[in-house]
Image 1 (cartoon, helix red, strand yellow):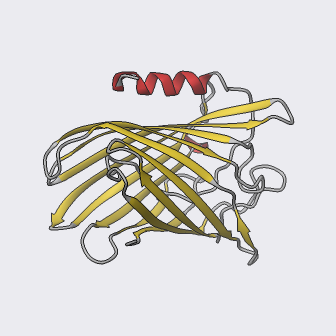
Image 2 (tube, helix red, strand yellow):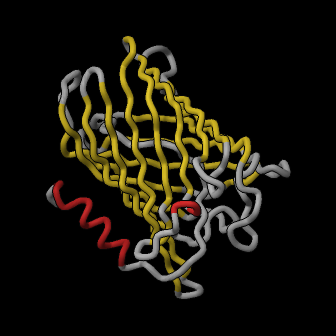
Length: 260
């Protein structure tokens, strides 16, 4: 598929799934995707950890485990099929406010980056990440679920700008219903010294496509983040603040790139 048609394709697929369904997501991964991708034959391993220090404590639907005071750990394995196509497997775990541990359920993905600047160069990048998951019903309502994440941005030695107009679609075959949500994410970062960048990450969940929630009810968070790409364990670390009463007030997150 030509790169220019990635976003229209993603939106058209999700728009066909717009039947009502209560929506909540397991926040196992807080990340804006850029042009990073494994080379052909290369394995990768990342450890995602995050915790909602103060957030929503009321279930969004009967039986849901709300995010308040939850601690989430996710192992992400990846493998470069080609230099432009990568496969991944997520294994997320949750430790909730009551002290109970859960295996949330597997996620698999394919990331395609057909356009990116040369190593150390500057220019635009474009791609698509497709993710399929079967998450515990107490953490996400609707299984299986599919995420379509277009990857659009620009990179230079000093700047990184990445935008992900994410479409989430969830299914409940037992009840004959489905839902699709629009949840864009944006990252702007600047290199401040070799191997270290400071920036901001913005996440929003507009709600169901075709019937967006009013702004006061959208899940909006702004993170101050640091990326360290040099050293034994490169990492991303961020502190997030909710921007309205419908959002979790404080969240911390980190992503560690584990050498293998």
